Image (tube, rainbow, N blue to C red; front, top):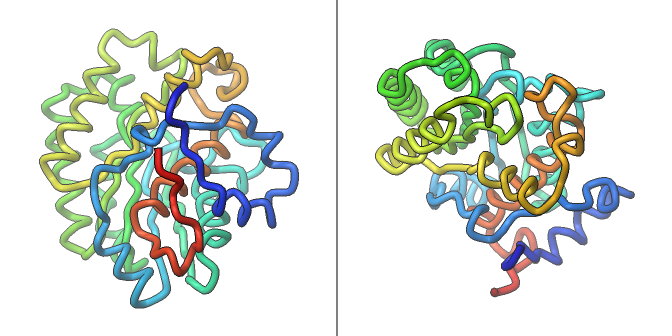
Length: 256
């Protein structure tokens, strides 16, 4: 894979807490283009630069809750918190895990206000799409729920990043999984939200020769420890690249 993310400063900072994680996460990578969220996340950027804090709500289903991990701390929201703290010393990082297994866009939209408002979120990561695709929710209904959920969250003063479907056997077997991913990309552009393209990131892992067993549990659907940790790592890199002033990270991106 060409044009892989090189972030020496972040990697050095993460070594302080990760110990042997570099070997453990061998193969965890994504191209620079795939880590482009497509949105400047101005609210989150301002919170980091001016308030020296970042409040993140991780909204989602089982991927966010951490189903499939051997330890709740391996779930991507906790990994995200650790990596953001390591990369931005002196910034108070709060990541609130609002994952409820089995929910789809309808159920998450219904609880969006109740879960986002009390946490005074600057940024909402909305992991969604897989359950809607598995349940065959019509894509126009799916898109409408995404729009409604984003509108609710933005009305509360938060930036949004949609995290799309995981590339795993149970999803790849669906007849139109890519249509759900396309709808999410379209809605993100329409509503001024970011997009963390988990589907394409994980597809590149598989296309580059990484077996499903390295990042998926035996049920063919949920991410295992490696998959969750890697998503947390790559999402943190994408967020930091977007919002963090150099004086906080001391880690400029190496140009490609």
